[in-house]
Every structure is written in structure tokens, then in C-alpha cells.
Length: 161
Image (cartoon, rainbow, N blue to C red; front, side):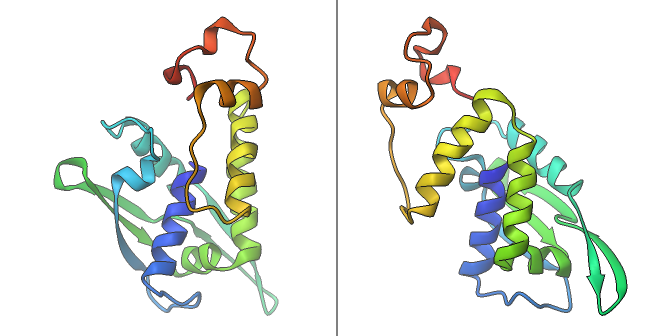
């Protein structure tokens, strides 16, 4: 889910959408980017992530008046599963484009992870903060970083979800 948030924020940035907009914004993003490099090609997990993102609620106060919104208003997987159309409401655009708000959203998504998922998130977030556009872990390196080098159950890539 965190990688999908990163990619949606990146798509807003690439489209040069300002952080303050009056209307919702439709984004078209290749589903392979939202799924991640080794994500399932059938979009099963991507659909789950997008559904969860429609449930991420934002709220706050602006000049003494309370407000509330969702991060993702609507999504559609099109072109045989290769593209995602995502409708981001104005508050969602602001949240994804504002570093302080984005950090809160990212933290909430990371908090929903458990065990090794959270540990893997920390490794990937560290690489992101270093500004590396991509990286590759060997299976042995990943097993070592995750502290499971001695576990037989993590001898194949597909055991890391």
C-alpha cells in the first residue's frame, strides 16, 4: 500500500499538479508501477490496496472550521489491467503533495503492517530517503537484512510478500 501511495504522489508531481486545487484530479498510472516491481501481475493485491486507500480518511481544521475527506475517491483498472485511473479529491491532492501530510499518511500505512512486512518497509523507506530511484537486493542480502538467513522458509523470493 505504501508503494501505491508513493507512486500516486509521484504521478501528481510528474503532472505538475499544485498542492492546492479546486477540483478533484484524475490520474492515469500504469498498474505495474502501483503494484511494485515484483507485484502480482493479476492486480489482486493492487485492488485490495486501492480499496484500502478509499478508506483512508483525512481530517483537520482550517481557520477554526473542521473538515474531512478521503485520500482516494474512486479508482478503475482499465486497458486489460495495465492502467489505473484514480480520482484524487482536492484534500487528497494537498495531502499527497504536502511533505508533512504525506509523512502522516505514510506512517499510517506503515503502521498497518506487521512483523516482517514492517521490517521490509523500514528497509525500503531507508533506500527512498537516500534518493535512490531504484535498487536491487539479492535473495541472500535480503534474508540477512531481514534477520531470516537461518530460516528455511525464506529461501525463495515468493516467500517475501
